[in-house]
Length: 168
Image (cartoon, rainbow, N blue to C red; front, side):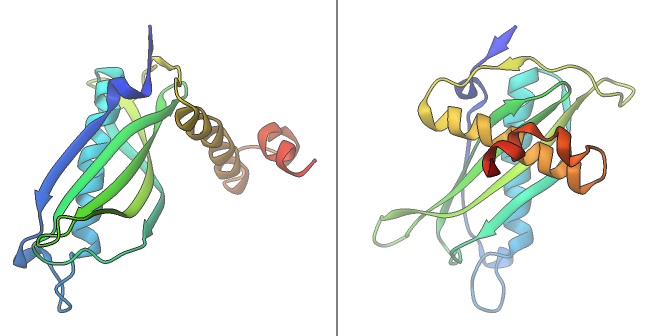
């Protein structure tokens, strides 16, 4: 069975409340990370229809602060599926409460693993990207995975073909 990134698309929308802000009246980073984790886990689960666990937070960028009372939308979709893991790309959008303007504030990349009831990793469906943007995320995911494996000492640099292709 194969799936497309759009099959996993998830959008969570909520408002920033006073209890979720710091002394500058901006959303706590940890609150945003939790929202991103929830959206990404739903996307991963939609892809594989199995229990999923967060394996890693590969990248997070806090580009813009999220003010109190903002409407925050967190979108997530699977960008690549490997044997038992899935990379999920997340975008955070803010809607200004009074102006109604929407802009991208943050982004992240998480990795999830599908597991069975005994917490053992299990295979996930293949992912077929459709759009040029999905193809770019798909291709970049393999480079990120190889870099992670090389840095962890689990792959020899000479075997990281996608990384070598960037420099040769």
